[in-house]
Length: 437
Image 1 (cartoon, one colour):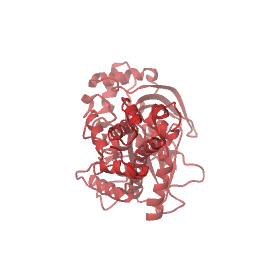
Image 2 (cartoon, helix red, strand yellow; image 1 turned 180 degrees about the vertical axis):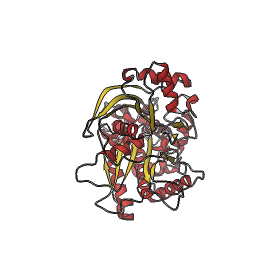
Image 3 (cartoon, one colour; image 1 turned 90 degrees about the vertical axis):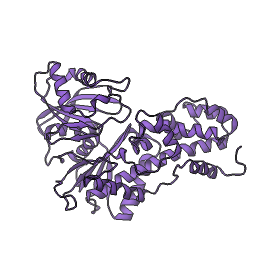
Image 4 (cartoon, helix red, strand yellow; image 1 turned 60 degrees about the vertical axis):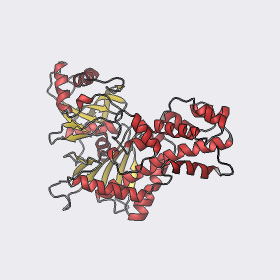
């Protein structure tokens, strides 16, 4: 039976509270939890985040006069191109092709997986002997620049690839495809590529004390530059990939738990499943369907919502941007059956998902800034290069993250930051990695 005489905000809050969904997650407390986990990982103790060493730092001078093949294998797409730096270090991009990431549509064996990679690179055969390979999955980076895959996230289906030396396997596949040049492949994560792109060409007159790469798109992750410290003997200054999506010391709602059980790998990528683009749509679906079953909406609207079979981030976000437009699935349903109260409650439920995402993203970025030990001067802030459509296009995420960082970093800790973007950032960063390794 529906609650009578209860305001909309109270009813939504009661529903979310009942299902253990935090309405206002404490960002400072979560930042502290992330920092402790980062410290444990760097100290060689068990941690949620992998804290992967990269043995690399941003270049001290511009690269110039060279070409490098770039591969960007992300959560959805496989992109490849040739990047050439002229004598002044200005890059140009040629032969760009984009296709689907292998392993999305069906499960592939190890051989099939790398065979597909080699086929995707035929248009770049022997155009360079250097490859910068941005592989957006958890890897242990070796000192020679290769990467050992720890496991796939983002629902990629190629389990035999886990544990492989990705660069070595790809080089063998290219040789089998008739490549004459013996290639050197430099493996890196997309967060490292973002960081390197931010460091490569700061705006004129800008000087930064450190750099961070952050991805909030299909997946979610962060990287920062760890300074040398007595706290970690033997650890030289270098870029560290956090694998923030694996952090597991965080409250999960009933909706998170329900979706996790339906995912390909239940119990993994805990934080990523709470806030990355691959999961926000299905998570919102669990929330809306539960709300409809528990009569948070009017009877007719609940019945209409229960007819929906799934929900994507695009559809969820479309309703938040324009609730009364009928071009989205939820907007069309609402136009037919929803009361004014139904509109408000549906909007608040979806906005709660976005709000939590923004708070989680802010905590990850805050922990990276703090761990860098930089940003103490307002004129030399920490440069944060953010990449990902979820960050830039999803309803109010960018604005909220920026606002929360002003609170937890600038006002609470006196640390300064600047969020930037760059065209072709991952491509540029991967190219730089291919030439400096």
